[in-house]
Length: 344
Image (cartoon, rainbow, N blue to C red; front, side):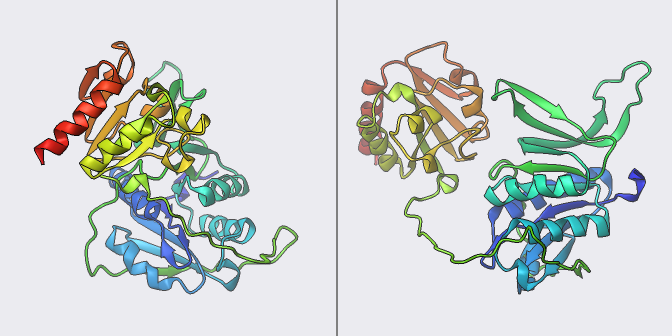
């Protein structure tokens, strides 16, 4: 493989029903950072039907170019036509880095495409940077520069692994929503739209969509909350989460939880924070009755202010908390709620 032929950072601009997903802008933000280190441009790959009108929005969030694949077969996401589109773009333009959101769509599309273009993919990355590989020089081993270093939790979240793909291109990674930060939009920016020559060809792997049933979600998204009051197994019961809801109401925030709470059936998975839940960045994050396992911390450690309440003074959550309160949450949380109400 002639690695020198591959240049540029490409991001998959996920859209559904003609509306761009927030992860599209987050990937451009990280892509700009990586592209600056490499001295290249960022191109957003927009796939769909009659979606060219979204291109300027991608430019506002930092895309230098928008590569458009437009075909009636791409109107609704299906694995085969979208894989043909993205793999075709990679073969046509030869990017050195391709970033895909670790959404339901991206987790299906990314591995499929990486297999077709014969490269590796690092899933659910929490950090991406340009550096050397091996990271430390070793006698007799060539150290390659300008590599994408992809960091993700490994072995069930018990350790952190940094992975590189030095001998194949493109270097591909999926990134969880909420992990990377989008840039401030530049109003009025216009996109440089490049129309791909990729043609979608029907084959035996196509599925036919018989019916689409849309369910209106009633739950607010914890990723949008500025204040989160999060509870863990230590809260004790589903009924005790009423205390956390009272505190959240007093603060104008939302209640979230750890995986143990979801496993116990106390809250829905929509409210789970962590490696197997959602990644959040609120202004204030209360971790109440949460031990602080690395799987949970991975989803909330970028919060501006972390306040932990736990009866175990050796709980790992105190290692990442800005403020910690050791004691009985059944006494502390109601007292804190009353104090906040009294201060209003």
